[in-house]
Length: 468
Image (cartoon, rainbow, N blue to C red; front, side, top):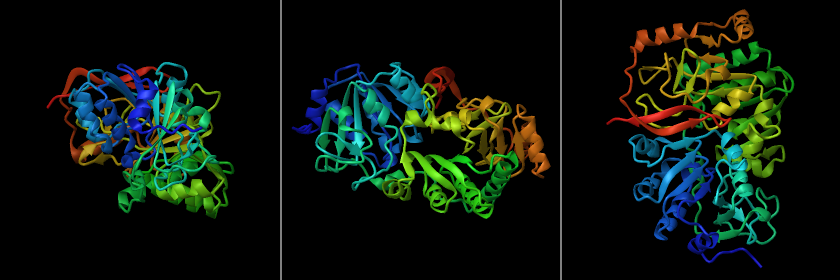
């Protein structure tokens, strides 16, 4: 007995997929993913329409989805992140229904509680046996952790594993067991692992970025959180990675051993593990191939599900034990609200991902951003879109000074006592505008093209159509 389907077409037919249903995808192959486009083309050829696509994230490689939207195959999208290729298309008003943006913790929570049920889940499986035991750490398309796919596999009505790495039964060390999988499809390629490394995954050499990174580490030290058992998450941006490098140097010099590093894991976090800065890494997604190799070979580098990572309705989640998170922003307003969904002209080019989840859970949520970018001030009176509420942000680090949320006077005093230049966020706004000028407001229409749904399920903002 095995679960091997003849091909993708027959697997879809066997699943009972019909008009109006919901299908899901995960994004661990990021900009190298082939599965979503392959599946959507097969579904379109079968004449199935009016589908909801629930994808943990969408990248530029998924731009062909636009044609399926135009043709009525897809009428609703649920996701945590959408890059600019597809985002600009959505911002122009092509979708029948508004996109629903969730967080990396809110998405699995809503799948599990039945708010967004999945009819058929498609799991890109770098290694899989004929019964459906599968994992992401092996195979020619290895992507590491499959943390975002685990809730889909556990809760979807029907689960199809799509693999280019068929292995003999039983495949051991699985991420998802055969008990959660209905069918297996072998294909020529599920993706290009080189596409995992999409975006900035190298330490910045820009003096401004390096100055901000050094200040960020000074803030962490002054906060009192950098001590034995310290836990930490950072993003894959150049300044954030530089901060991780400087933090590693401090931890090694002062012989501070942290408990865990968290999140989407980069090779820089792997270096911190190997050099003794952390006891373990808890990984929901690998950001580069060094992280993929680490999760395959080092038992201290552990895969976790999106639920375990950040669900606000789980019995507990790792973000709730996080000391410090370093995050980015396209905009921050004088109330410390953060925008990571749109660019300065209001077009969709991102999403919360784990931004809101980690900000809510961490003891210290820090934004690193220059006071202006492309001659546009980062600090504004009101962000174009609220992605993460200001109530969960503690500090903004720029090259000109540090602003502390007024909710935390103790932190402000700690930073001043440490000799860190602390400024009111309005001062940073004025300073940026003196250099770059006040930004023009984008030409926004009335029609809502996306809803921003906070991790607890409440809608916190709307993204509106951008007029040409």
